[in-house]
Length: 116
Length: 112
Image 1 (tube, each protein chain N blue to C red):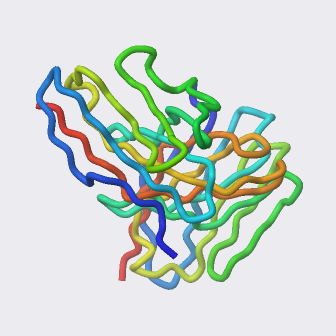
Image 2 (cartoon, each protein chain N blue to C red; image 1 turned 30 degrees about the vertical axis):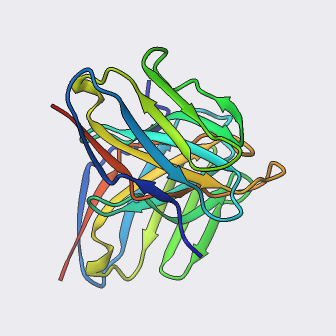
């Protein structure tokens, strides 16, 4: 049973380029979350998606960042015109649907984005 | 405004002894609390969780205690092993499939 998969694991982009980060959730999981971790910080929530729907994007910067989780294929986090401050580790997590009870989010290995 | 706080950036414990990691939160609407373990260059690994209706949950060497009146939870690891050396994150969420709010982590070093 494969876990959450993310690719690429490492991504280097020059300032002004676009970064695309991919996430495939665990089998049977229909909820995807993206988090960002800056050095020496905890993980900060960015966006929560279900298939074809953005449920909560309150943690995502209003400009340059977008996310999608299409009916087929992985979830994509896209960062346009990257700046040095975008350098961070980006983690994807997935969870199963719950009816309001307990659940756990399972994380992928992360994509380390470096902007030069 | 940090809603989940881990006030100890680091902790050193001798192998075989108990490790106690602490976490405080401010949002009384949090319904569910989780602990994750993270090694360098890897994603967080789920360890143990507790619902707000309980005050203790145990899984092998790991026990989480929740004190709702104090808005405090702790993770106990006993006996501690060198392989437990990692960064431990406390996280909290509301009910259902809601995003997690993380603390900044505590780096645990278990010394042989």
